[in-house]
Image: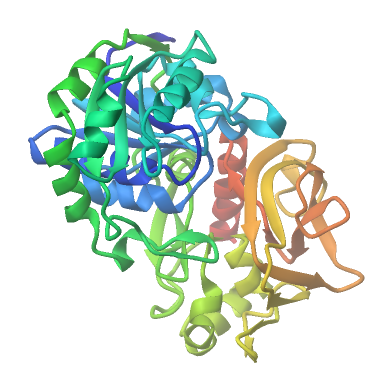
Length: 445
Protein backbone atom coordinates (compact mmCIF):
# COMPACT_ATOMS: atom_id res chain seq x y z
CA UNK A 1 0.00 0.00 0.00
CA UNK A 2 1.37 3.40 -1.00
CA UNK A 3 2.23 5.91 1.66
CA UNK A 4 3.84 9.33 1.94
CA UNK A 5 7.61 9.20 2.31
CA UNK A 6 9.09 12.42 3.68
CA UNK A 7 12.84 12.35 2.99
CA UNK A 8 14.78 15.53 2.19
CA UNK A 9 16.34 15.04 -1.24
CA UNK A 10 18.35 16.79 -3.92
CA UNK A 11 19.24 15.78 -7.48
CA UNK A 12 22.68 16.81 -8.78
CA UNK A 13 22.37 17.35 -12.53
CA UNK A 14 24.13 19.13 -15.39
CA UNK A 15 23.61 20.29 -18.95
CA UNK A 16 26.08 17.72 -20.30
CA UNK A 17 28.32 14.89 -19.21
CA UNK A 18 31.72 16.02 -18.00
CA UNK A 19 30.45 19.10 -16.17
CA UNK A 20 31.44 17.79 -12.74
CA UNK A 21 28.36 15.91 -11.51
CA UNK A 22 30.37 13.10 -9.93
CA UNK A 23 32.75 15.50 -8.18
CA UNK A 24 29.92 17.71 -6.87
CA UNK A 25 27.62 14.83 -5.92
CA UNK A 26 30.35 12.76 -4.27
CA UNK A 27 31.78 15.75 -2.44
CA UNK A 28 28.32 16.80 -1.30
CA UNK A 29 27.58 13.31 0.01
CA UNK A 30 30.89 13.14 1.87
CA UNK A 31 30.61 16.67 3.28
CA UNK A 32 27.08 16.09 4.57
CA UNK A 33 28.10 12.75 6.05
CA UNK A 34 31.01 14.50 7.79
CA UNK A 35 28.42 16.67 9.51
CA UNK A 36 26.99 13.54 11.06
CA UNK A 37 24.04 13.18 8.70
CA UNK A 38 22.89 9.81 7.39
CA UNK A 39 23.18 10.34 3.63
CA UNK A 40 21.52 7.89 1.24
CA UNK A 41 23.14 7.96 -2.22
CA UNK A 42 21.44 7.20 -5.53
CA UNK A 43 22.54 7.17 -9.18
CA UNK A 44 20.17 7.74 -12.08
CA UNK A 45 20.58 5.18 -14.86
CA UNK A 46 22.21 1.75 -15.15
CA UNK A 47 25.79 2.69 -14.20
CA UNK A 48 27.74 0.42 -11.85
CA UNK A 49 30.88 2.47 -11.26
CA UNK A 50 29.67 5.82 -9.89
CA UNK A 51 27.69 3.97 -7.18
CA UNK A 52 30.94 2.50 -5.82
CA UNK A 53 32.19 6.04 -5.19
CA UNK A 54 28.92 7.14 -3.63
CA UNK A 55 28.85 4.11 -1.34
CA UNK A 56 32.40 4.95 -0.26
CA UNK A 57 31.48 8.58 0.45
CA UNK A 58 28.32 7.81 2.43
CA UNK A 59 28.86 4.45 4.09
CA UNK A 60 25.40 3.44 2.79
CA UNK A 61 24.88 1.32 -0.31
CA UNK A 62 24.13 3.41 -3.38
CA UNK A 63 21.07 2.37 -5.38
CA UNK A 64 20.29 2.87 -9.05
CA UNK A 65 17.11 4.67 -10.09
CA UNK A 66 16.23 3.72 -13.67
CA UNK A 67 12.68 4.08 -15.03
CA UNK A 68 13.36 1.86 -18.05
CA UNK A 69 14.62 -1.12 -16.06
CA UNK A 70 12.57 -0.61 -12.89
CA UNK A 71 9.42 1.13 -14.01
CA UNK A 72 8.19 4.36 -12.44
CA UNK A 73 6.66 2.63 -9.42
CA UNK A 74 9.90 0.71 -8.99
CA UNK A 75 11.89 3.95 -8.86
CA UNK A 76 9.67 5.29 -6.09
CA UNK A 77 9.70 2.00 -4.18
CA UNK A 78 13.50 1.65 -4.27
CA UNK A 79 13.89 5.27 -3.23
CA UNK A 80 11.52 4.84 -0.29
CA UNK A 81 13.02 1.54 0.86
CA UNK A 82 16.67 2.63 0.62
CA UNK A 83 16.03 6.05 2.20
CA UNK A 84 14.61 4.59 5.41
CA UNK A 85 16.53 6.10 8.33
CA UNK A 86 18.34 8.65 6.15
CA UNK A 87 18.51 12.36 6.97
CA UNK A 88 18.91 13.29 3.29
CA UNK A 89 19.08 11.58 -0.09
CA UNK A 90 21.54 12.81 -2.72
CA UNK A 91 20.85 11.62 -6.26
CA UNK A 92 23.48 11.95 -8.98
CA UNK A 93 22.00 12.35 -12.45
CA UNK A 94 23.11 10.88 -15.75
CA UNK A 95 24.25 12.72 -18.90
CA UNK A 96 22.43 16.03 -19.38
CA UNK A 97 19.40 16.79 -17.23
CA UNK A 98 16.86 16.18 -20.02
CA UNK A 99 18.68 13.40 -21.92
CA UNK A 100 16.56 10.24 -22.00
CA UNK A 101 16.07 7.20 -24.22
CA UNK A 102 16.05 7.57 -28.01
CA UNK A 103 16.01 11.36 -27.94
CA UNK A 104 13.07 11.51 -25.51
CA UNK A 105 12.96 12.53 -21.86
CA UNK A 106 12.00 9.03 -20.68
CA UNK A 107 14.59 7.68 -18.28
CA UNK A 108 16.33 11.04 -17.95
CA UNK A 109 17.47 12.73 -14.77
CA UNK A 110 14.55 15.13 -15.19
CA UNK A 111 12.18 12.15 -15.38
CA UNK A 112 13.46 10.82 -12.04
CA UNK A 113 13.35 14.30 -10.48
CA UNK A 114 9.68 14.59 -11.47
CA UNK A 115 8.86 11.11 -10.15
CA UNK A 116 10.40 11.96 -6.78
CA UNK A 117 9.30 15.63 -6.78
CA UNK A 118 12.93 16.41 -5.99
CA UNK A 119 14.58 19.81 -6.42
CA UNK A 120 17.61 19.95 -8.71
CA UNK A 121 21.06 21.35 -8.01
CA UNK A 122 22.54 22.22 -11.41
CA UNK A 123 26.30 21.77 -11.82
CA UNK A 124 27.55 24.11 -14.55
CA UNK A 125 31.05 23.97 -16.03
CA UNK A 126 32.19 27.61 -16.06
CA UNK A 127 35.53 27.03 -17.77
CA UNK A 128 35.99 29.29 -20.76
CA UNK A 129 32.79 31.32 -20.25
CA UNK A 130 31.30 34.05 -18.08
CA UNK A 131 27.93 35.60 -19.02
CA UNK A 132 27.10 32.69 -21.33
CA UNK A 133 26.75 30.34 -18.36
CA UNK A 134 23.49 32.12 -17.51
CA UNK A 135 22.10 31.33 -20.94
CA UNK A 136 22.87 27.68 -20.21
CA UNK A 137 21.23 27.87 -16.79
CA UNK A 138 18.14 29.66 -18.14
CA UNK A 139 17.73 27.19 -21.00
CA UNK A 140 18.21 24.05 -18.93
CA UNK A 141 16.18 25.25 -15.94
CA UNK A 142 13.31 26.55 -18.05
CA UNK A 143 13.01 23.67 -20.50
CA UNK A 144 10.60 21.58 -18.41
CA UNK A 145 8.30 23.45 -16.00
CA UNK A 146 7.77 20.22 -14.09
CA UNK A 147 11.41 20.20 -12.96
CA UNK A 148 12.46 22.73 -10.33
CA UNK A 149 16.08 23.87 -10.40
CA UNK A 150 16.59 25.16 -6.86
CA UNK A 151 20.16 26.34 -7.24
CA UNK A 152 23.39 26.28 -9.21
CA UNK A 153 26.95 25.24 -8.45
CA UNK A 154 29.49 26.70 -10.84
CA UNK A 155 32.38 24.31 -11.36
CA UNK A 156 35.93 24.98 -12.56
CA UNK A 157 35.86 28.68 -11.70
CA UNK A 158 39.26 30.07 -12.70
CA UNK A 159 39.76 33.03 -10.37
CA UNK A 160 38.09 35.65 -8.18
CA UNK A 161 37.78 37.85 -11.28
CA UNK A 162 36.07 35.00 -13.15
CA UNK A 163 33.58 34.64 -10.29
CA UNK A 164 32.86 38.38 -10.27
CA UNK A 165 32.06 38.32 -13.98
CA UNK A 166 29.62 35.44 -13.53
CA UNK A 167 27.98 36.95 -10.44
CA UNK A 168 26.85 40.03 -12.36
CA UNK A 169 24.27 38.09 -14.34
CA UNK A 170 23.04 35.37 -12.02
CA UNK A 171 19.32 34.69 -11.92
CA UNK A 172 18.98 31.58 -9.73
CA UNK A 173 20.50 31.08 -6.28
CA UNK A 174 24.18 30.16 -6.55
CA UNK A 175 25.00 27.55 -3.91
CA UNK A 176 28.61 26.95 -4.81
CA UNK A 177 31.72 28.20 -6.58
CA UNK A 178 34.12 25.29 -7.05
CA UNK A 179 37.59 26.35 -8.21
CA UNK A 180 39.36 24.81 -11.16
CA UNK A 181 41.55 21.94 -9.94
CA UNK A 182 42.89 19.30 -12.32
CA UNK A 183 43.40 16.83 -9.47
CA UNK A 184 39.66 16.70 -8.75
CA UNK A 185 38.87 13.91 -11.17
CA UNK A 186 38.65 10.14 -11.21
CA UNK A 187 40.86 8.35 -13.75
CA UNK A 188 39.04 6.52 -16.55
CA UNK A 189 39.56 3.35 -18.55
CA UNK A 190 37.66 1.41 -21.20
CA UNK A 191 34.42 0.89 -19.21
CA UNK A 192 34.40 4.30 -17.53
CA UNK A 193 35.79 5.62 -14.26
CA UNK A 194 38.07 3.60 -12.02
CA UNK A 195 36.34 1.92 -9.10
CA UNK A 196 36.20 3.53 -5.67
CA UNK A 197 38.74 1.18 -4.08
CA UNK A 198 41.26 1.92 -6.84
CA UNK A 199 41.57 5.69 -6.25
CA UNK A 200 42.00 8.05 -3.32
CA UNK A 201 40.08 11.20 -4.27
CA UNK A 202 37.06 11.10 -1.99
CA UNK A 203 38.63 13.12 0.82
CA UNK A 204 39.61 15.78 -1.69
CA UNK A 205 36.03 15.86 -3.02
CA UNK A 206 34.73 16.31 0.54
CA UNK A 207 37.17 19.10 1.32
CA UNK A 208 36.57 21.16 -1.82
CA UNK A 209 32.78 20.87 -1.68
CA UNK A 210 32.74 21.50 2.05
CA UNK A 211 34.78 24.67 1.51
CA UNK A 212 33.09 26.03 -1.61
CA UNK A 213 29.45 24.87 -1.53
CA UNK A 214 26.75 26.31 0.72
CA UNK A 215 25.76 23.12 2.54
CA UNK A 216 23.07 24.87 4.57
CA UNK A 217 21.56 26.18 1.34
CA UNK A 218 21.60 22.69 -0.16
CA UNK A 219 19.91 21.28 2.94
CA UNK A 220 17.24 23.99 2.80
CA UNK A 221 16.55 23.13 -0.85
CA UNK A 222 16.44 19.40 -0.08
CA UNK A 223 14.00 19.95 2.79
CA UNK A 224 11.65 21.81 0.48
CA UNK A 225 10.78 18.56 -1.31
CA UNK A 226 7.23 17.43 -0.49
CA UNK A 227 6.41 13.89 0.66
CA UNK A 228 6.43 11.43 -2.23
CA UNK A 229 3.91 8.62 -2.65
CA UNK A 230 5.60 5.19 -2.78
CA UNK A 231 5.25 1.58 -1.68
CA UNK A 232 8.29 1.05 0.55
CA UNK A 233 8.63 -2.72 0.79
CA UNK A 234 10.29 -4.09 3.93
CA UNK A 235 14.00 -4.78 3.30
CA UNK A 236 14.34 -8.57 3.08
CA UNK A 237 16.65 -10.54 5.34
CA UNK A 238 18.82 -13.39 4.16
CA UNK A 239 17.02 -16.63 3.37
CA UNK A 240 18.19 -20.19 3.82
CA UNK A 241 19.22 -21.15 0.26
CA UNK A 242 22.92 -20.34 -0.36
CA UNK A 243 23.53 -18.51 -3.64
CA UNK A 244 27.16 -17.84 -4.53
CA UNK A 245 27.82 -14.27 -5.67
CA UNK A 246 31.17 -13.46 -7.26
CA UNK A 247 32.62 -10.29 -5.73
CA UNK A 248 36.20 -9.14 -6.30
CA UNK A 249 38.15 -6.88 -8.65
CA UNK A 250 37.21 -9.07 -11.63
CA UNK A 251 33.48 -9.35 -10.80
CA UNK A 252 32.14 -6.18 -9.22
CA UNK A 253 29.06 -5.18 -11.24
CA UNK A 254 25.66 -6.08 -9.85
CA UNK A 255 22.63 -4.06 -8.82
CA UNK A 256 22.01 -3.93 -5.08
CA UNK A 257 18.30 -4.49 -5.74
CA UNK A 258 19.14 -7.82 -7.41
CA UNK A 259 20.55 -9.16 -4.15
CA UNK A 260 17.40 -8.00 -2.37
CA UNK A 261 15.29 -9.91 -4.92
CA UNK A 262 17.27 -13.06 -4.16
CA UNK A 263 16.89 -12.55 -0.41
CA UNK A 264 13.17 -11.90 -0.75
CA UNK A 265 12.83 -15.21 -2.63
CA UNK A 266 14.60 -17.11 0.17
CA UNK A 267 18.18 -16.88 -1.07
CA UNK A 268 21.24 -16.15 1.06
CA UNK A 269 24.06 -14.45 -0.89
CA UNK A 270 27.43 -16.06 -0.23
CA UNK A 271 30.16 -13.75 -1.51
CA UNK A 272 33.44 -15.16 -2.80
CA UNK A 273 36.33 -14.27 -5.09
CA UNK A 274 36.84 -16.50 -8.13
CA UNK A 275 40.40 -15.14 -8.21
CA UNK A 276 41.34 -16.18 -4.69
CA UNK A 277 38.69 -18.47 -3.19
CA UNK A 278 37.54 -22.01 -3.82
CA UNK A 279 33.93 -22.37 -4.90
CA UNK A 280 31.86 -22.29 -1.69
CA UNK A 281 29.10 -24.79 -0.88
CA UNK A 282 26.20 -23.17 -2.72
CA UNK A 283 23.03 -24.23 -4.50
CA UNK A 284 23.26 -21.63 -7.31
CA UNK A 285 25.77 -19.15 -8.68
CA UNK A 286 25.50 -15.51 -9.80
CA UNK A 287 28.48 -14.26 -11.83
CA UNK A 288 28.03 -10.56 -12.56
CA UNK A 289 30.06 -8.29 -14.78
CA UNK A 290 33.36 -6.57 -14.18
CA UNK A 291 36.89 -6.79 -15.52
CA UNK A 292 37.89 -10.43 -16.13
CA UNK A 293 40.19 -9.21 -18.91
CA UNK A 294 42.35 -7.38 -16.34
CA UNK A 295 42.68 -10.54 -14.24
CA UNK A 296 42.65 -13.25 -16.89
CA UNK A 297 45.83 -14.99 -15.73
CA UNK A 298 44.67 -15.02 -12.11
CA UNK A 299 41.26 -16.37 -13.11
CA UNK A 300 42.87 -19.09 -15.19
CA UNK A 301 45.01 -20.13 -12.22
CA UNK A 302 42.30 -19.50 -9.60
CA UNK A 303 40.86 -22.21 -7.38
CA UNK A 304 37.26 -21.77 -8.59
CA UNK A 305 37.57 -22.31 -12.34
CA UNK A 306 37.66 -26.11 -12.50
CA UNK A 307 35.18 -26.45 -9.63
CA UNK A 308 32.66 -24.23 -11.43
CA UNK A 309 33.01 -26.36 -14.56
CA UNK A 310 32.32 -29.54 -12.57
CA UNK A 311 29.40 -27.99 -10.69
CA UNK A 312 27.86 -26.70 -13.93
CA UNK A 313 28.08 -30.16 -15.50
CA UNK A 314 26.37 -31.48 -12.37
CA UNK A 315 23.43 -29.13 -12.95
CA UNK A 316 24.24 -26.24 -10.60
CA UNK A 317 22.00 -23.31 -11.63
CA UNK A 318 24.25 -20.50 -12.85
CA UNK A 319 23.40 -17.01 -14.08
CA UNK A 320 26.27 -15.12 -15.78
CA UNK A 321 26.34 -11.53 -17.03
CA UNK A 322 28.91 -9.97 -19.40
CA UNK A 323 32.15 -10.60 -17.48
CA UNK A 324 30.46 -13.69 -16.09
CA UNK A 325 29.74 -14.81 -19.66
CA UNK A 326 33.40 -14.33 -20.58
CA UNK A 327 34.51 -16.33 -17.54
CA UNK A 328 32.08 -19.15 -18.34
CA UNK A 329 33.24 -19.38 -21.96
CA UNK A 330 36.06 -21.68 -23.10
CA UNK A 331 38.75 -19.05 -23.39
CA UNK A 332 39.53 -15.34 -23.33
CA UNK A 333 41.90 -13.64 -25.75
CA UNK A 334 43.29 -10.47 -24.15
CA UNK A 335 46.53 -8.54 -24.50
CA UNK A 336 47.84 -10.86 -27.20
CA UNK A 337 47.45 -13.98 -25.07
CA UNK A 338 44.76 -16.62 -24.76
CA UNK A 339 43.66 -17.76 -21.30
CA UNK A 340 41.60 -20.78 -20.33
CA UNK A 341 38.27 -19.96 -18.75
CA UNK A 342 35.64 -22.26 -17.21
CA UNK A 343 34.54 -23.96 -20.46
CA UNK A 344 30.90 -24.16 -19.39
CA UNK A 345 29.10 -22.45 -22.29
CA UNK A 346 29.99 -23.27 -25.93
CA UNK A 347 31.78 -20.07 -26.92
CA UNK A 348 35.11 -18.26 -27.05
CA UNK A 349 35.71 -14.66 -26.02
CA UNK A 350 38.12 -11.99 -27.14
CA UNK A 351 38.74 -8.37 -26.19
CA UNK A 352 38.36 -5.73 -28.90
CA UNK A 353 39.59 -2.14 -29.05
CA UNK A 354 36.11 -0.71 -29.68
CA UNK A 355 32.77 -0.96 -27.92
CA UNK A 356 30.91 -4.07 -29.06
CA UNK A 357 27.61 -3.39 -27.32
CA UNK A 358 26.14 -0.42 -25.46
CA UNK A 359 22.58 0.41 -24.43
CA UNK A 360 19.40 -0.88 -22.86
CA UNK A 361 18.17 -4.43 -23.36
CA UNK A 362 14.57 -5.62 -23.51
CA UNK A 363 14.36 -9.42 -23.48
CA UNK A 364 11.89 -12.26 -23.19
CA UNK A 365 12.70 -15.73 -21.88
CA UNK A 366 12.19 -18.67 -24.22
CA UNK A 367 11.92 -22.30 -23.01
CA UNK A 368 15.18 -23.57 -21.55
CA UNK A 369 16.95 -23.42 -18.18
CA UNK A 370 14.73 -21.65 -15.65
CA UNK A 371 11.92 -22.92 -17.90
CA UNK A 372 9.23 -21.52 -15.62
CA UNK A 373 10.26 -18.09 -16.89
CA UNK A 374 9.31 -18.77 -20.53
CA UNK A 375 7.40 -15.76 -21.80
CA UNK A 376 8.55 -13.53 -18.93
CA UNK A 377 10.20 -10.22 -19.72
CA UNK A 378 13.58 -9.07 -18.44
CA UNK A 379 15.18 -5.66 -18.84
CA UNK A 380 18.73 -4.55 -18.37
CA UNK A 381 21.74 -2.87 -19.93
CA UNK A 382 24.87 -3.90 -21.85
CA UNK A 383 28.28 -2.27 -22.18
CA UNK A 384 31.23 -4.35 -23.31
CA UNK A 385 34.41 -4.37 -25.36
CA UNK A 386 34.57 -8.15 -25.57
CA UNK A 387 33.18 -10.25 -28.41
CA UNK A 388 31.85 -13.72 -27.64
CA UNK A 389 31.63 -16.27 -30.49
CA UNK A 390 29.09 -19.00 -29.76
CA UNK A 391 29.25 -22.37 -31.52
CA UNK A 392 26.87 -22.75 -34.50
CA UNK A 393 24.60 -25.13 -32.57
CA UNK A 394 24.49 -23.03 -29.39
CA UNK A 395 21.15 -22.58 -27.61
CA UNK A 396 19.86 -19.30 -26.20
CA UNK A 397 17.46 -18.42 -23.38
CA UNK A 398 16.60 -14.83 -24.31
CA UNK A 399 14.92 -13.28 -27.34
CA UNK A 400 15.70 -9.57 -27.66
CA UNK A 401 13.42 -6.84 -28.92
CA UNK A 402 16.05 -4.25 -27.96
CA UNK A 403 19.81 -4.60 -27.55
CA UNK A 404 22.61 -6.47 -29.26
CA UNK A 405 23.30 -9.32 -26.85
CA UNK A 406 25.05 -12.19 -28.62
CA UNK A 407 23.70 -11.16 -32.00
CA UNK A 408 20.72 -11.95 -34.21
CA UNK A 409 18.28 -10.89 -31.50
CA UNK A 410 19.50 -13.48 -29.01
CA UNK A 411 21.25 -13.54 -25.66
CA UNK A 412 21.70 -15.93 -22.75
CA UNK A 413 23.78 -18.90 -23.90
CA UNK A 414 22.42 -22.14 -22.40
CA UNK A 415 24.29 -25.22 -21.26
CA UNK A 416 23.23 -27.62 -18.48
CA UNK A 417 21.42 -25.31 -16.00
CA UNK A 418 23.62 -22.34 -16.93
CA UNK A 419 22.50 -19.17 -18.70
CA UNK A 420 25.13 -16.56 -19.57
CA UNK A 421 24.80 -13.46 -21.74
CA UNK A 422 25.79 -9.84 -22.17
CA UNK A 423 22.68 -8.45 -20.45
CA UNK A 424 23.26 -6.91 -17.04
CA UNK A 425 19.77 -7.75 -15.84
CA UNK A 426 17.66 -5.86 -13.35
CA UNK A 427 16.02 -8.80 -11.60
CA UNK A 428 12.25 -9.00 -11.34
CA UNK A 429 10.52 -10.70 -8.42
CA UNK A 430 9.70 -13.60 -10.76
CA UNK A 431 13.31 -13.97 -11.81
CA UNK A 432 14.55 -14.00 -8.22
CA UNK A 433 11.95 -16.63 -7.34
CA UNK A 434 12.91 -18.77 -10.34
CA UNK A 435 16.65 -18.68 -9.63
CA UNK A 436 16.22 -19.41 -5.93
CA UNK A 437 13.62 -22.07 -6.79
CA UNK A 438 16.12 -23.77 -9.11
CA UNK A 439 18.71 -23.56 -6.33
CA UNK A 440 16.28 -25.11 -3.85
CA UNK A 441 15.59 -27.99 -6.28
CA UNK A 442 19.33 -28.53 -6.78
CA UNK A 443 19.97 -28.63 -3.05
CA UNK A 444 17.26 -31.27 -2.57
CA UNK A 445 18.69 -33.73 -5.07
